[in-house]
Image (cartoon, rainbow, N blue to C red; front, side, top):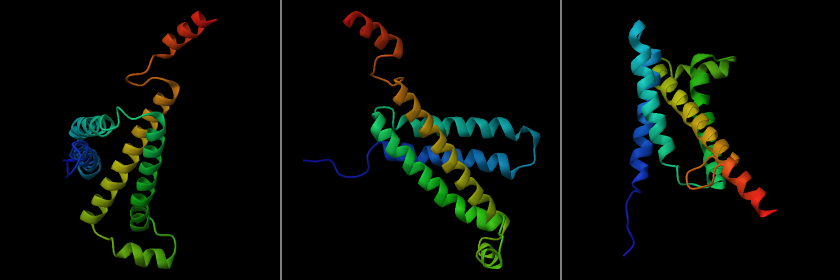
Length: 150
């Protein structure tokens, strides 16, 4: 019987994004000079959780995943941009719906988390494309293998 329900990686992915968003919130929302260490720790653990969900994916799937993360980052940034820096009167009217410190902080946290996750997945794709990927030979091993084939 096929398994139903969420994949085990979905809760890890969601939890990772929540940790990254919490790290962005801690860094942006508090004025304490000690905020950097907890923010960095939350972001690092969240990014590690997000990237660990894709560690067994091939380069093609990582490329598609990176594209999806960038689309999510763009979609999350648009409301944040409208709320914080409206250029026209119509943008200001839309931005007024998102006015307020709590909503602004939440929008910043979500937009920041999406951009950080998109960057991490893009880096992971770059490594996979170059050949630094779990389960694949290292670039040095490939060069040595190519030379012995001649």
